[in-house]
Amino acid sequence: MERGIFILEFKEVAVKDRALFETYLNKPEHFGSECAFTNLYIWRDYYRTWWTEIFGFLLIKVELEGESYYLQPFGGKDEDLPLLAKEIREAEGGPFEFRGIYECSLERLSCLKGEEEFRENRDSWDYVYLQEDLATLRGRRYHGQKNHYNTFKRENPDYVFEMINPENFAECLNFGEEWCKARMETDPSIVWEIRALQEAFVNFEALGLRGGAIRVNGKIEAFGFGKTINGEVCDENVEKANPDIRGLYAAIQTECAQYVWPDMKYINREEDIGLEGLRKAKEALHPAFMVKKYSLLVK
Image (tube, one colour):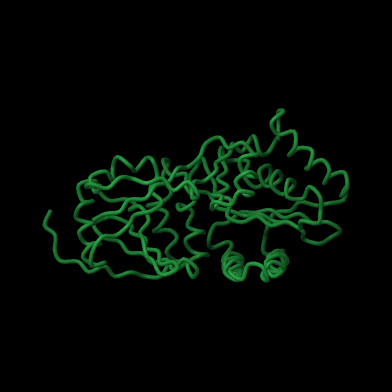
């Protein structure tokens, strides 16, 4: 096939791009959080996310804290990968890096390795759980989690679980904003999380999101929401709960699994970003498997 001269022209991610993105991302072999369009959209200002289509590939570029990289290319034909790499190299004026490469793509991208090797990015690996495990908390290994959940139900017998919907968007967003503001003094970057929450709730239906919330004494005190990736797995994008209410985190995790995701086999609860406490908490929920991710420097 004859190729002309291409110039990589990137666009900002917009809600209207969802359908196009999902033709590339929502594949049976994809289980990673990068394949949930919601993440690419609501965090686009923080990660400065751009995209283009070229040679049948969806190419996503990220600019963060003075460096830029590309997510693994989605779509396209294997024989066109060297040509894609050539275009990116020319646009960058030298070597560039692919990140978030899934295991299922390692063999495909090995033609670009040269003398480089794929590098594991353990901090970015996603934790994927069986929906049934999180919904039922069955068995000895979930004894602690079930105790927390039962404590919440015992101490808050009149609590109410409800699906997130247009009637409670504003309340959920207000709770999420207050949750973030309470932590802003120690983590100023959380302002980006407020921005992400605002984008999510303003565009909740257009993004195809699903979620649930818990009321205690009539007030929203927890919520979680996410997006399906394919027919088997969803990505739980955001989860917030009032830490002063005992067992509430266990409750929102369990009831979202029960009522928001009953048709899913797996729930992706994303990465631990290298935080020891978060890693222990995610491991304590006993993931069915991890979505391993790798990076590759292409020279």
